[in-house]
Length: 632
Image 1 (cartoon, helix red, strand yellow):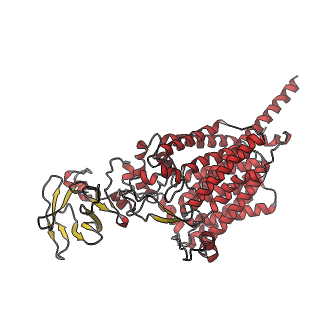
Image 2 (tube, helix red, strand yellow; image 1 turned 30 degrees about the vertical axis):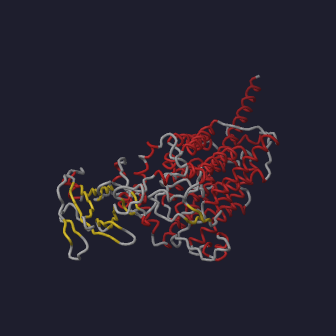
Image 3 (cartoon, helix red, strand yellow; image 1 turned 90 degrees about the vertical axis):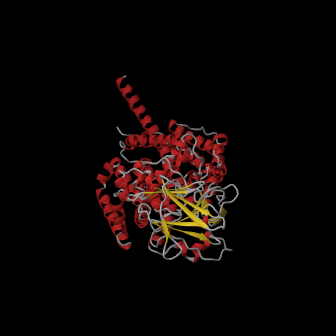
């Protein structure tokens, strides 16, 4: 006999929590994701030679979210002190929380041990997910688990969550239909100080929503976290207006998802809804008309947005599952103390040499000055044989006569650059040993914003990704350079929020080949790699155990439920949201705009699961007592 059918026989003694105790959970779910405010700051990254953007920059979507996450977590600590000491409530602990506690402890140790601990404690450029935020996620998991074990608190919190979703839906729809609220004078007055009079212009594609989430790629995350919960609310709530509100928000979120062009978001949502369908199979069979109408609405919304954006959704989904092998003739450029070595192998040369790079593919360049200060060049191949070159008809550029190296080069002497320019396949590389400052020696290459740097020497890579840099929308290259870092940062990582420092941002050749030239790689576009590099592989293992334990426990519960109670519906909705988020995390990072929602939901899910299991044990015990009474 099921837990739901016997629940009415249980004593109902739920703890009533005032709004003040629910406030941090509501803030994480509905308020903090909305925070958007201008913040001018100094990056402190100019100490790194690869940092190629301005040291003073502006943030709108991340910094103040970090600040309010920390404030909310401090408030949580006071709430827990009140509950445990003033209200004399007993603390509660379950084994499933142990891996999360281990992760938080390792994150804190990583921050302390990091070479760049100042960034780990304060947050970094374009991220602002400091160690206090990471520990705050763990704290909110526990607090949500502790509080959300009764129906009244859960209902009250879900109502506020829906309000937050409604505001996000308004913002997202205004962007989908190209009337962005943040481009109105009133919208801009809310996110910038009154002293700042210049109009703000965000560089997002027209019709592609970003809401308050920093990047359109994160819109898929938000939809995956909200639609499964909204869907279960259709069945969980009793009032007609609440069901209508949930249905309208689902339609709005789907329009926003399709408008964001998030292929991974669409795939993740489909998979999470499929798991929910299996768990709630009896509910959907009983309400098949609602299910059929929902499918029609989803398909209609998909094609509406697809047609509004010139068939972009279908094209992007088709491209998601194709990845052709790529070949890059330029293998490497080494900025050595005495020369510049270029490794170049055309496709024909590659075939002739059976895919191996040999000394024949190396060009060694030296720029020298004679006794009168005139510039001249020495070019040799890897076998130390002279490579011929001659001055072109323009009297400026030199052309290499050797067919192995179809390059041109010229001297550059002006106020901004002293050295030579090497042109390879139409792209100009600025190289010099004449602009060294104190402590610098040898040749350097100029990156974006005139930063002079020694180019990275890449020794470890992933063979498959080496030929698929453009895999998953050009993530292949980033993953190819990130995965080898896991060995280096196995135990404690590079430190929270320091991925930008750990990544070889001076690998200009790899960035050129992959289409990332003159960019800064600030994140790995994979939450699991992000955790593994920043706080260590051990912390990643702990986090994966935490996620896996929750998923297995939830599937065991919701596969057997009959879904006649509010908490069981919300529990399976949260399971769907967590599944969608974890799938999206394969191609996206943890972010202060969305992770607070995720960790709060998984904490609520743990609390709901714990309550359901307790009730199931209560029912089982009652049944056992009845059988004994009958026997006696």
